[in-house]
Amino acid sequence: MQVVQVQRLNEDAVNQSKPLWLAWVGMDMPELSEFWRLYLQRFAVDHWYRFAKQRLHWTVPKLSAPQQCESWSDLLPLMTWQLWLARDIVADNPLPWQKKQSKLTPGRVAQAMGGVLGAIGTPAVAPKPRGKSPGWTTGKSRVRIIRYPTVKKATPKPKKEPAKSA
Image 1 (cartoon, one colour):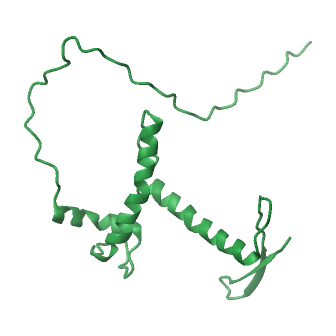
Image 2: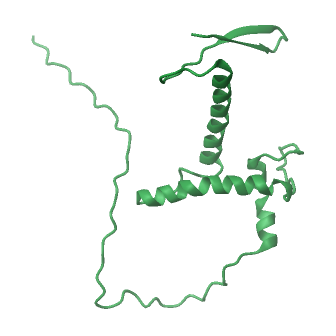
């Protein structure tokens, strides 16, 4: 077992050295320098998951099929790359309580993407005027969509107390 000593300055500018305990599950433990690099990569990935859930609304859609969930999840890295590549073409438009930034974060780029999308327009055709829907074609068979149950965390039931004798 190897212990890494991490040094940092606290609020009082006192140099403190504390051990950083890292665990490895696997056959062969890598070298400490490689292990530290892997830990730093995990740190970045954890922040991306937080960004994907909060700003890109990864968990908001209530999709009915696992394939739809996979497709939605496959879009998130593409959205992240679009934000990363667009950081040079968007103008920082901070909200009143935000400070100006020279290097825009993906969240700040997402905040400014409305201007870019408004400038480039949309490839979609204009919507057709609404009217009376023709409805379901006569004689066409209907197939029910497969419904998957929502997985919910069950609350434990209270234990029954044995009856007390007099």
